[in-house]
Amino acid sequence: MINIAILGYGTVGSGVAEVCRMNQDMIAGRAGETINIKKILDIRQFPDDPFASRVTSNADEIFSDPEISVVVETIGGATFAYEMTKRALANGKHVVTSNKELVATHGPELMALAQETGVAYMFEASVGGGIPIIRPLNKCLSANVVTRITGILNGTTNFILTKMEKDGIDFAGALAEAQALGYAEQDPTADIEGHDAARKIAILASITYGEFVDSEAIYTEGISQITTADMDYAVRLGSKIKLVGAFRRREDGAADLIVAPMLLPGSHPVAVADDVYNAIMVEGNALGEAMFYGRGAGKLPTASAVVADVIECAMHIGKVPHLMPWKRNGRDIVSRHADCLVKALIRLKKSADPEQVNRLCVQYGADWLESAREGEQALIVGGAGNLTEQALAQVVAELGEQVLSRIRIL
Ligand code: HSE
Image (cartoon, rainbow, N blue to C red; front, side):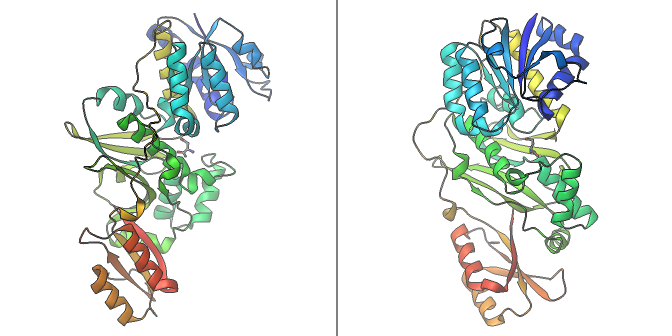
């Protein structure tokens, strides 16, 4: 029997218990032994839960128990969860997590500590929810230089944007619906402002480099400014607006990284992902393109990935499952955002000075786009493929209050 403990009995933690119960015999067959949830750490009580008797608020009961060999960390955040994870690894327990904030922030230290104590730190569920992506990058695609990753990496924002697109409701209405359905947190800032997606694309880039990629160095823009008027232009262009996390490896080895709402051609492979689905396209120099698609958020999909890692640990008790760790090398891999190339749609008030706009069109190579709304006009800049982010910012600054919105085009 393999004894495990779950730290944090919220949505994902309780999902882990549910999956372990639901598929108990099959999991035991694959793991080679029964997985027994011996303890659950939470300050709350869950009297109606089948595992109610195993809930404790005393972490010592877990760390001092030599029978517990795998700890599932589903606390979230990078403070208390960091302390708990360090304690578990230092005590020679494998740790499995869905906590992308912690992996993106302290991954190198935690992986080094795991190596030191001969255990594993596993985080398949930290990116893409239930979609396999961490292990494929670490193993199946390890013969490739990964040159590009384009992903819809946040389920909550994808749900909101899909609602806006399909039902014509505004951002506030779609967010309220996401909250009512339990997708968005009561404080959904990390989702809607893009930080969650930035952490996820940073984790994927870190795996491909074997070096720490700082999510805080990634230019990140959220979706709260997107309007139904922007959606009309998406329809006009045969596109969808998605929160995209994009990584491109430059020839000099630097990483162009961005998280922002983008107009994505309807024919782009990742554009198939609607609602809480995620899609991640990976391009390798030997493989070409591969697509990973599925439920990127939610209780059981995320728990599915966590429990798979628990099974992997159970199969390797006494050994360390091999994944490619990344280290801090002190170099800044993320390239300067201002130098990255960009293409964008700019919506302008009808009153914008035509002479000024025409001058900018000549200077920066913009093209008019037939307006999708009364009382405004629209331009596409960067179509020639040589507009930098810095130049885009200049165009927008020069047009000032005439600008209704600007959205990048993938
Ligand atoms: N808040 C995250 C999302 C959960 O909506 O994608 C899964 O990481």
